[in-house]
Length: 116
Image (cartoon, rainbow, N blue to C red; front, side, top):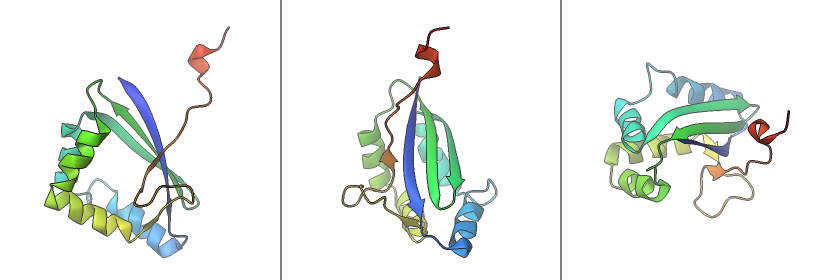
């Protein structure tokens, strides 16, 4: 198992940010979306926010394949509807590639690798 960390910005509007957070509460998130996440080999997912910046941590199974997840999601109408809804709240990072939402972050420190 390994961790992946990704970043994304929300539109800098307090009402939109509050609505985005509401959609991510357990009672509002769509079960089809949760199922697609788990079926892809994502064992744990957490999203953190500061201001309008989001950071997502995913603990993934060894067989997790982001390209396969993207292909499966593209064929899933319900996941596509969720992504369209979430796009109303999100904005790409300035350095994101065209069409890229969540941008992988590079790990620059790991306490486990430190002496002592």
